[in-house]
Length: 333
Ligand SMILES: Nc1ncnc2c1ncn2[C@@H]1O[C@H](COP(=O)(O)OP(=O)(O)OP(=O)(O)O)[C@@H](O)[C@H]1O
Image 1 (cartoon, rainbow, N blue to C red):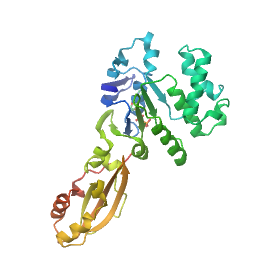
Image 2 (tube, protein in one colour):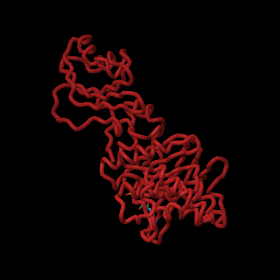
Image 3 (cartoon, protein in one colour):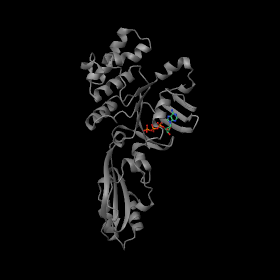
C-alpha cells in the first residue's frame, strides 16, 4: 500500500513562486491499479518526480508499507527509491548497452553479482515477452519493445509500487493496447500500480480507481465504477462524456445515466410512454468499464412537456438524470 498525505511541492525562483503540488493525498492498495488524470500544467510531472523521490517534496509524506520515503536521509535515498519502479514516457534506455544489460542495470547499481543480475534480467525479459531480444541494442527495437524493456527494468529491483509516467502517449493505438495488456498482466497482490496519464482510454482499460489532478490538488477520486456513476462528476464527464452534437436542438435537454443491467433497458422509450411525449436521443456514450455497462444519453424533451417531470420519471426507474443546463460543463484534457 502506498499512502501519500498532503504532499506539497513549491518552486521558488528569483522571479516567481509556484506551488506545483498543493496538498495531494492518495492511497493505492497493493494489487490495484490507480490512474491519475490531469491537464497540462496540473502537476503530473512534479508528482511523478516527488513520488519517485527524484525531487524532494516541500512537505507531506509518502509512506510505502511502513516506511516514509520523505524521511530518508541522503545516504539511504537510493534504497528508498528502490521501493518504487518508474517507467518513463520514453523508455530512457542506454543505447550503448544491450537490452538485458539495460534491465540488469538497477541491480548492478544495487551491487548484485553479475550472474544473479543477468539471470533476473532474463526472467523479466521473458515476463514482458522479449526473451529473444536480450542481446540486441535498444536502437534496433520498436517504441513498444523499448517500453517493454523499460517496464522490465523498473521491475528489476522488486518494487512495492510501479509508477508509470504517460506510458503510452508516444505509442500508436495498437502498441498502446499491447502495453496496457502487459500492465494488466503484471498486476500482482504485492504490487501497487500508479499510472499518470492524460489519456482517458488508458484509465478505462486498466484502472481500478482514478483521481483527477488539477492545479496541484486532487479534486475528485474514487473507484472507476463509482466516479463514472456520478452524473455531475467531472471524471464521469471525462470518461463517459457526451460527444459533440448540434447546438440548436429544439426542446429542453436532459442527461440520463444508467449502469449495469439497466443500461440495456429501454428507459427512455418507457419514459416517453409515461409522459406521453416523444423523447429524442441526441447523443450518447456507452462504455463497458470494469465489467459493468454504463450508458450516458442526452435526450431532448419537446416543448409543452415538463422536463423536470421527465427527470423524475427517469429517476423512478433507477437511472440518474438531470437537466443538462444544470450540469457543469467539463473541458476534457
Ligand atoms: N523546476 C521547476 N521550476 C519552477 N516551476 C516548475 C518547475 N517544474 C514545474 N514547474 C511548474 O509547476 C507547475 C506544474 O508543472 P508540471 O510539469 O508538474 O505539470 P504537468 O501536469 O506535468 O504538465 P505537462 O503535462 O504539460 O508536462 C507548472 O506551473 C510549471 O511551470
